[in-house]
Image (tube, rainbow, N blue to C red; front, side):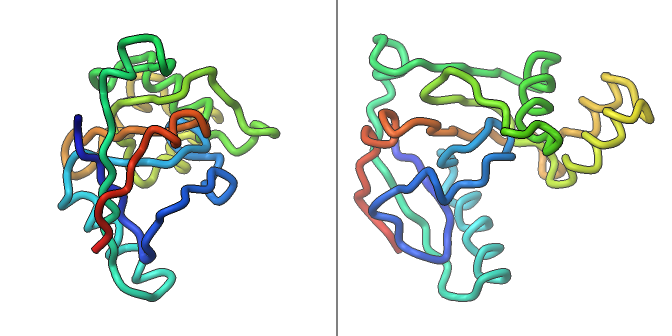
Length: 163
């Protein structure tokens, strides 16, 4: 069992995928981290934008479900070409409707917050693939995220704390 954290300005006891942005690193999903401080940083940013109080929602998750066939799972161990292609397909807002993959859960590095600019530069041919990947590196160093992409996967998250 692992604990995963989600930063917000509200307590989230019922996760609604329809409220999630479809143009994120791994598509429309509920994003979590194993690092509480990282979730608090996200919570503080949400408060700056929307007001309210910073909340770190903590969920228990049985990670065996990722390897026993219960959930389909895709994992990226670093800033690879495959990861860059995956992020590009999901973050490129010219894809209408948004690109969707077949996985319940995706795990991998967080892309730089200025990914939209880098996608535009790459699409227009202003930078090559290697420069695109270099510019996608997260400014705070490599940090990983879990994306719960389906209702089936979300049902496996058990909220145990919100504060």
